[in-house]
Each structure stands twice: as structure tokens, then as C-alpha cells.
Image (cartoon, rainbow, N blue to C red):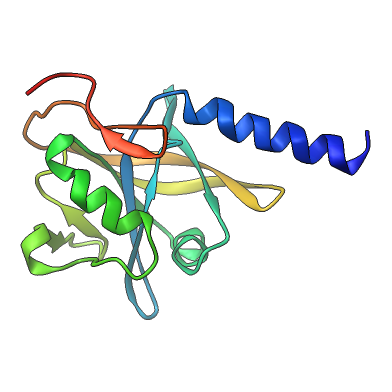
Amino acid sequence: MDLGTRQDVGDRMKGAFRRYPTGVAVITATGPDGPVGLTASSVASVAVDPPALSFSVLGTYSARTLLAAPSFVVHLLGTRHAALAHQFAHSGGDRFTPDQGWTILPTGEPILADAVAALRSEPLHLVPVGDSTLVIAQVVEVFHGPEDRPLIHHSRRFTSTEQG
């Protein structure tokens, strides 16, 4: 397969996934320079026994710090968190501000108390795939927050499938 065709398939695949709605999460950890976080739309349940999830990240500073951490928290978000998801999706966005509602777990990770759910996890497998890393992690603690309408990522926007 020539490189031009591979690039075309990659571009078409990105276009296909823009048409596919996914849930939205913010994943946080603490690194040597303090807390880091990023928005992910690739979180999936992998198994119940042992409880495990997966997600993928690119090679950003936040992602590299998260991949080096012994544990992290995957926050499943509702529509009340659309602005927060946007902030964590872009470098230079406001992160871990007092008005966002962050606290620190006894294990050191930042946690958003009003997330729909927060899953403290420990990495099991890191699988490099091109310029991304697929993370498979064991869920070691689950925190449930208040209910909310679903926040989805679709066509490069954070939105809801339900009306308010």
C-alpha cells in the first residue's frame, strides 16, 4: 500500500469517527510538577472481573505524565461539564481552578467530586500504536456523583443528545 493511500484512509477514518458520537471523560493524574489532565472520548469498559477500562492518548505533555503515573482518575462527564471538557481538550486551557470543584484524593490524584462517576485506575498495559498509546487499566475505586444528562463528543463539539 502506498503512503498516499494510507494517509487518505487515515483522513477518511478521522472523518468517519467525527460522525460517531462518544462519551466524554477527563482523565487526571499527579506528576512530578503537579496535576495534569486531558479530555478523552475513547474511554471504554473492557471487563467487569477484573474491573478494567481502556482509552487512548496522543504524546502530549499531559499524556506522557499520565502514562508515567502509578494511578489516575477517569471522570465520566455530564452536560454540566461541557466547559470543563473544552478547557482540558486544549493546551493552555484553565485546569484545576478552584471554581471547577477539584479536590485531592488521599492517594494523591485530583478528583472532580461532581463528575457523574470517577474511576480511580491503575495501568495494566500500555500499547503503543503509531503516535498514540492504548491504555488498559484496572479500576480500583469507583465514586458516583450526581446524575446529569449525557455529554457527548460529536463532530468536534461537546453536546447532549437530550433536550434540557
